[in-house]
Image (cartoon, rainbow, N blue to C red; front, side, top):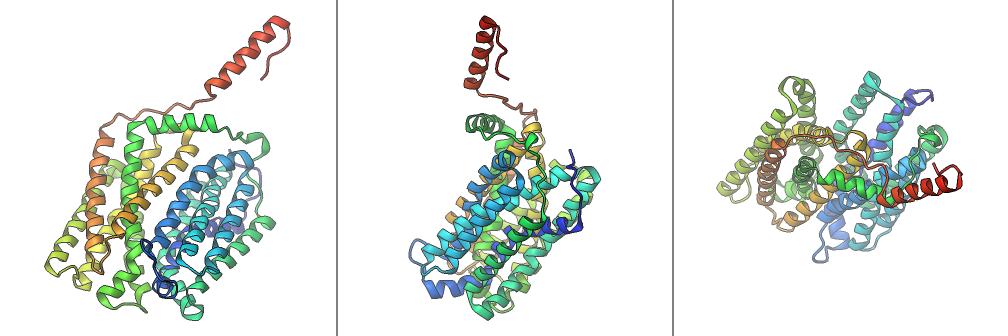
Length: 430
């Protein structure tokens, strides 16, 4: 149901900026990771790679809570709480005197950023439907495609002006501006009459039903591996370009070139998926990611882990084109059987796939040795693993997951009230 609040272009811009906070929090910091490592050191077993991967780890836990909280407390309040926690984590990282403190701040940032990420999607669903919703999401997605291309250049400029702490200063300013904008100008879209009480047992029961669906669970795992391949690249990209090719100042331009592959793939997927089908597009993309990874492995074997820059860029473009095809299709495939559990399902899919991606990245990132070999292994494993999981998932017959309306304990309580009412003549609890 569309809320009876006026739709303004200002609100659409604000939705887009709130949604982009996740990507900016990752990509703008990449140019400052090497300087951060020099300033703070990298005490074993930590490295600056964890500054990226553990941000996603925090986000995974936040996403589990934010969806149900926004249904119970309202979108605006949940969004504000998320921004406050994000700002607190940013302040910790900004003032940190050790890498451990930066990582603590990044975990809090990740938990906090899930507030704007999930609550904004819910606000859009509350206010728009049909063609209007598709138009809004298209505008926001266009911005999200541009953010990975432009954010590293922004980060590079901030690092040149104020060092890596300048990037966190920008994050703090952005959180303050967005928080003030939300407080003054953004209306609540979920009326009190439509709110759903936060019942942990009921949520756990419905979560169990979602994860018991074989197709959904397999697709979550496949999505986690694909996201893990991208996150592995993000966590080592700045070091990789510097160690292999001596690229530092122009890193944002090379990063943008590979990020463009994701945007191009998503653009083409939107036009082909109706004709070709989600399953067929996903299968081809799985094979493409696997092939790009295996070819990069071959290039690493030929050139001792240091393939020529054109070879690396070409194979990287192919891998990220496949990843761009997979993100939309895998999420749509996982969500199609969830029906009325779509909100909780979206939180579970996002959180669990992020957790798998973090574990994948931390495990393979530990083997980074100044060559492209760990990335080639990551692309190959993610592609082949997701291909196998996707094949198993697509063999399963899709069936709608039925929502659990009340826990067994609640049901017993209601039945007891009804029996008592029958004996006394009083109306039962409703």
